[in-house]
Length: 379
Image (cartoon, rainbow, N blue to C red; front, side, top):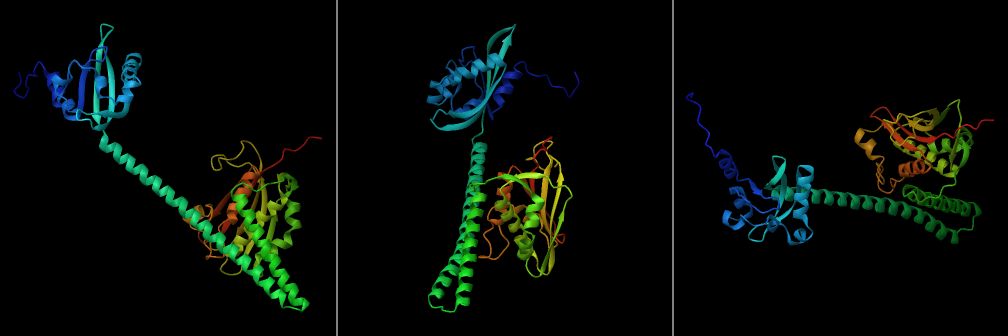
């Protein structure tokens, strides 16, 4: 025999099993009574050989689990499927509980079941670490929800305060104004503030998908051209608003009022993004979206894209992604609730379509509403 070879002892398997202290490894007869016990079993569960050999392995289960037949279910599954693995709470000799990973394998000899091999590992530390991580994730998610509510409350409160302040001030001043032109200006200011309050309410409802829509078939080109002057005025005196409407003008099912409010929101957002005189373009085109990019599309369906693009400073990727979040705004407190884009996305979704943002620093921003095209009716 070569000098480096050492004869393996005849009871090598027994020695190996007794040496493994990180695992409780024991043999059971076909009915679940323990036949052998290793040092790992004593370390993990606290029982010596004399205390468990001949005992049923269900003594390690919680009383309620044993009453439900969990031990027998494990044996039956191992016998039927060739292996049973699970994770659960088990009981030590001193009554304390530990989290265990359990594997039961059937032992087959000459085609006959002669017993089971069971391996148990104490995974309490790992389990508790996972639970702490889950709790931290839940705490973070709750904090994010609270922060979203805080942002909503802050933005909406400021917006409504501004609306109410204009209305109340105008009404107070009307009491002492006899000049008809002054009275008319105050009435106009109050009406504009009330309109702003109504739009804010509609944005909230649209975001929550609680805004009632009355969709009817419409030609988008006609709707846009009909309100072209309104969009130009919304763009402001220092920003040009142009139109690039595609040759194809299919019919779409929409609520015209909500569509115009969504487009107005996009024009206003584009205007506010400009740090200097710029240009806003409202455009349309028809295409079949790539489902890999837009998973919400109906396969094979054509969509009408209505886009509002500006040549402003654009957004970095983090801002672009966050712009889709409700109540997120880059405007100063009191100048926006962060619901404008939420209204747009809510409207697009309720209309059976979707919306998305394309932007990059120095390249401007394009926001697109995609609406499914009504199939042509054969004559």
